[in-house]
Image (cartoon, rainbow, N blue to C red; front, side, top):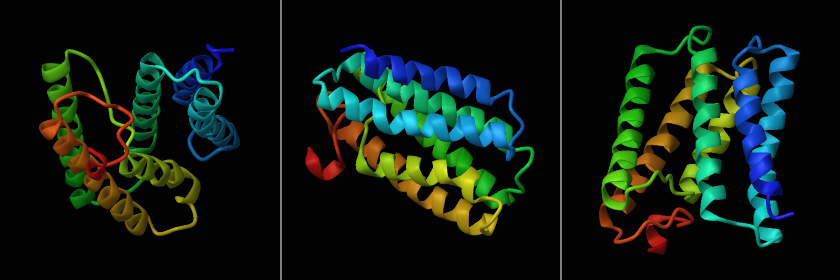
Length: 176
């Protein structure tokens, strides 16, 4: 029972890899995508309810999130018309994220992405992108995603720069 959350998280990594081989915006893509998103919601919930939450589980969750994000970006970038400014903004966000990961590795000798409210919020809005893409103006979606992703990336960077220890379950910079 204690391994179920980690099994669900690992299944998300596998589903994300399978998602790489599906055609975007078609039924198999949406099925895999929504199952992956659902698994992201339930793994942590089950871990907390069964008192099976662990450092390994939190790290696996971050790896699964990162895997899914990279796969979706690779699949959608050639299809979605992203304005140059948005592309530059995405690169800046990626640099901030890589800087945060580097600081974590240098300070704590491990991999870690903090599960802040802002990170969760940007993850949710990013998750919604492929679902709403056919129905909503791309600029509105991309600017909204980039704004929240920038906020969450800066918050995480500030947390890493000011914290004495790594707490991947820290909810915000105001909960130090």
